[in-house]
Image 1 (cartoon, rainbow, N blue to C red):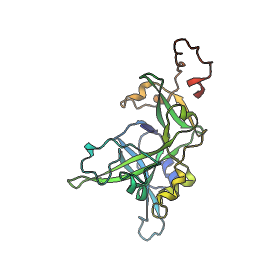
Image 2: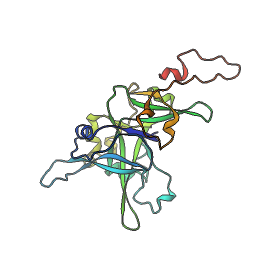
Image 3: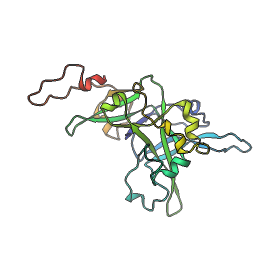
Image 4: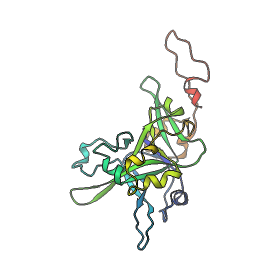
Length: 253
């Protein structure tokens, strides 16, 4: 799944990678939690007068999807993720999958691994090559009874792979740059025609770096959240020998 992520690209990075223009300046964000605004890239068909070419643009949305049919969002769970395997059929996400697929620029995300107790170890998960990437997202505009509108969004998830499979069984869907246009083009590509893009990332795409539990607090927002920390191997159960060095959690380092 994806419950926290980071974005420290510059506006120039966004414009070049996603072929958008006039991105408003924004500060680096190292700990983005649900309900805060997140940046999404969407497709317009077209928006420039006299142009026949579709264009991409950025938009800020509330991270927490509200379906258009919702009467009272307070009665809904906080929908920050959508399962890619069922989103096209679910009443909550079906319209967005057909008409409002988006890209969510990211530098990486955080995931937590439980060690069998109530304690959990956070990891900073980023591409091994150091490049930026994009999650697959969905957007919906919800109209309040008073007439105002709120743009909302969710991140699609799929099964995890590689090192991530040892941490959590779900991970965000990653859309590769070569597939950006097809994913965003909701006019010419129905959900069934982009289903092949919603697959687990290649096993070696991400690396998982153990970090301190400072990321657990939303108030902590500095780059130090992504610094590696040393972790101890899990304690062996009574009567069992400890695993050899290099196995267990240490094999992620």
